[in-house]
Length: 324
Image (tube, rainbow, N blue to C red; front, side, top):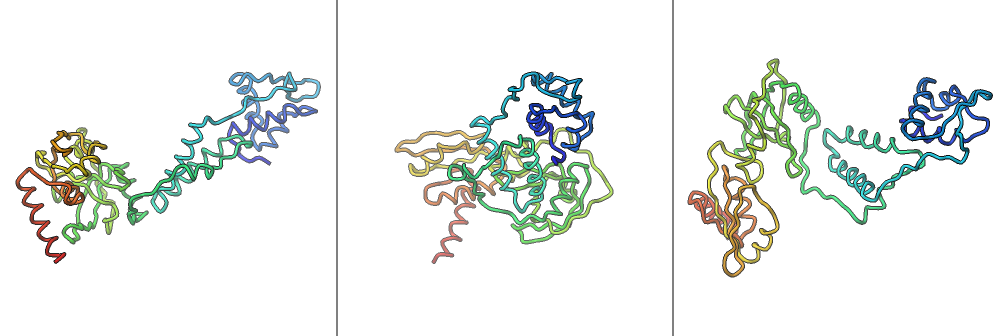
């Protein structure tokens, strides 16, 4: 028996049976496919009208057949691009193993494969030597916490959370209005209005130690946009102050790599003598640009603003003491 076949698989079954002798009746086909007789009639009409199949009713034998016994439905085929796209989608789903969406994505991909005719098999392993994915890091997400967050964002439900701030090594109690969940560079972030800080803050879901939905709901401001918040950030974190002009100089070695990317929408690049390069940004936070500059080591020098130069100098002095 073929149970609960999607329409495309039912059509594949009908295509085989409509060439048989004696021609099958609607009731026989309904029994074989475990659907109603009405569904068989709808499928036959669809094959005629949508696919142009020459399906006739044989009043003598009381069954359905093709007017031309040699007729076959057009084959369902993949283009090369479609097959690669399906492979990439399946591999992308694997990046969410161990996350709240793992089971949902697995079920979704199975539904896609189930839509294919029975004759088609998808062996994505044939492309394994050609494409691969490797996440930079994996956060230890609590699945139930993430589900509560996702539902609260959808329902506009206020939350009471116990949140760990790694930078201060401190845990605080907060009431937040969760506006938006975003996956940025493979990491999940929550944009929420913090009632204690009276402003929109960015939270890491994996740092929420406890979570409890409140009775209160909220209205998300119409002018809220995560894109606007991220305009002042090199990555995710942005202070509430106005963006400041930040200038970084790179030596010829680093300049070759800096030219390859757009690091921020505000960036301006100036070529300097000897293959050096100057990168100018407008950011509202020093947190990520400090890490960015330090990551380039001796190949990068911060020129402005002075406050950032001072922070970099202090950080480098501390590092020097660690390596003495």
